[in-house]
Image (cartoon, rainbow, N blue to C red; front, side):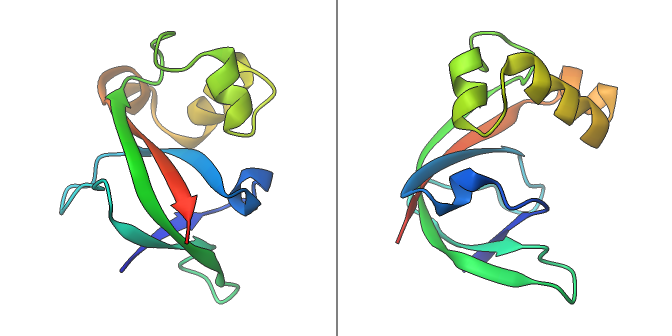
Length: 111
């Protein structure tokens, strides 16, 4: 079972179903029906296992595409709106990644 790490304890992590955006993995990308361990600070001495989930849906698109990320999607993901989500991504990733690399929108269901 692979680890799906988070650097912030988003309120969504405690919901039965929630979404997260991840770039494709180079070794083996995330798959539907894959079971994952939800972990806060996975590479830290403060590591905390928050539970387990199954990936129930996977969509691919660019974070900058309005059809892929709407205000409703951003709010569901824990942001005030689409703009604040984009600002967070700009502070976290390079402009090249944001503009050129597609992301996976994973929908998870706690198990």
